[in-house]
Length: 569
Image 1: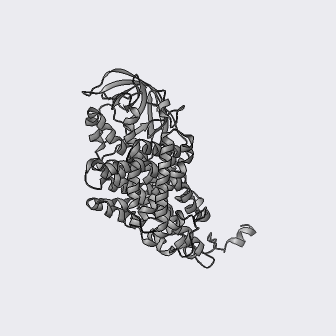
Image 2 (image 1 turned 135 degrees about the vertical axis):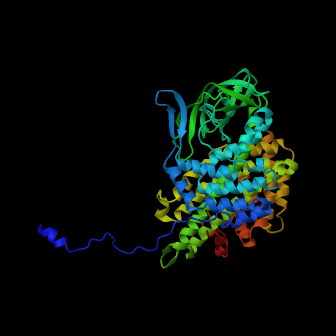
Image 3 (image 1 turned 60 degrees about the vertical axis):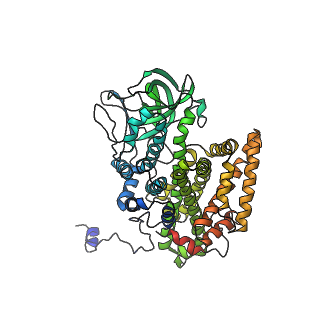
């Protein structure tokens, strides 16, 4: 034995250097419904008691350690494209990690993709919005195909023959991620969508994909077309069917493209590549080519945008819900961290400056949730109420514009509350941050939303009156609010006049007016449904212009602890 070996032979080696404290436990096994009083209040308000036990179970499941681990795995083991099989046959399949299938089957089994179409009861859209709000907090990527399936259902009403075949499959709560090939039947169906192309982006009327009539399909009234062209963004390419836009002889039209034909053979659906995206990593988004791909006309030929807009309106609701959801989870994570982490002799959450930041984030999150849930309520009321239909139409654009704009700055402030611990991939915050810009781009960018608001107030006679009536419900609580509500209605009339005259200044002022309108709508809901001290803080900071340019600039006298308390997990 060497001298060195003899020297160390009597020493017990121990890798532990010292005791480490002041670390934050992982946030898991939290019921995402029971821990969210804002959401609970909204569900009570919008008549969803019949769904409450199911919502409780879903909230418990989505907040469980098991589902949080599935979310983590689905974002670490990304989808893989397989264009050909081992002998060279074109198959165009995407392989997902089992965690993705677990997330999808959980949401499908709960009915997040179909609840209002299966249980046509008061508050069904609101109850379904609550499930989407909870699912999005756990894992946003799988919510994309869930949302598109939910949104496709009502579009199929425009073609009863197609509806008879596909709607029962959407109503199923069974998820099977494989394609239906060679007689292997599937009970359920997931839908995707393809609108944008390389040359067009948001300008879908510039699409170059061509549809040629080839005869009648196997359905009694369906018309069968051959599609040739491409889609630059086709999300969830392993879906069972897609609603797309293409140019036919009568103009831009809407078509249903099945992945598998009635004879059990694969349709031509060539996936060129999967997008390497900033976020939404668990969900595959692709570029696809159509080469005489068979498709069925949906709705009236030449009215593709008017046909598919119903799907877009529903997915825009989910964009608003998703952005509000990211904000909620951002605050919850920040509050949890600061309740367990000490600095300079006290818990972070007890530091006055941190209290200001957390309370400000909480106000933003609560106002976002109230607006998203009020919009979902309008979807429930619209079929029997023209005023609510008008509110649904214009507020879908307003809410999507504003909530999707606010989410990224909100999430990054929540991330900063964690310091470096929130910047590493083991934490959920980087994933929330990468998700946060998506909803502002998907289903129409901010400028498109403002153009839609302009179009609504110019073409719909009662649009401004509907908004004015909504804002009137909260008058007399605050003179600041009353003045802001009056001012924004005046600006809407100015915007309408400029838009109808085709003046450039309409577009120049549009973003500012839509922003102010969103804030006043949120303030109106805070007055009616939040605590008076929270409503007052929101009005003082957002409408009275006493707020700074960053979060954490609320005024002295704000009831910080009471506002933060609603976000303690």
